Length: 315
Image (cartoon, rainbow, N blue to C red; front, side, top):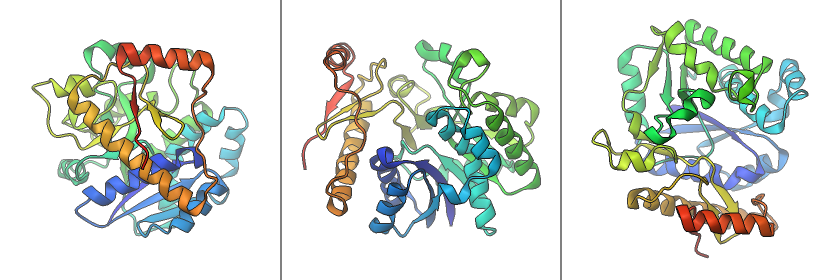
């Protein structure tokens, strides 16, 4: 059985359910998705949905004194980044039989079986795997602030060397996990830049960079000779705007038909997820992006120039 771990709160429940559904469709082998529930409502709703592949973790039962201390000196978003590295230990400590674990951002969505990525990793004989942002040339300057590698799909084995690297990463994120790039990094990500340099015998960087898509590379990948069928899409920056609209990552053109088709598939899963949640909790509403007059004007401007929004049809 393959093991994955993710984390989200009530506002990301539709994305989290879409992630789980995409794993169900694409995985050729049994899997377990460990979910760190960041609030009680998320834990309760997932318990009521009763997904057999999901194993729920309650944040209060996982937090250590060191994490609670770190929580006091950073924003909620920064604390979520801090928790990503610690999620590995939450699972390893509770499930001794788990020998390999992959962290997934909650807004990752699988288009093909992730086994191909993990098979590449296993064939290297290494013990940790990371993926590049793989920015398109026009966005490559983001490497200076967000780092070369993306905490979207990170795999650790339960080996002493891998756990030592994990412990170092966790200590770094507890010390500093800031959204301010002027402090020398961005969240938990920039720390990964040193891994292939310091621990090259331990860490594998996924070979095929365009098998992991995101707004910053999807259109470029669709036109690239390097392109292979993508394994997942990372829906960075997507926001819900009520029950009928979503906002794509503002600032990226995303004009290629192949990219738009991926968004259409995802919006269908989000709609189904919200419908399922409202069947068991009629009052459920995920947090929506602000809808001030200025916000709508900006949204309209981006839609006209960059096709930044697409319709989510009612079911």
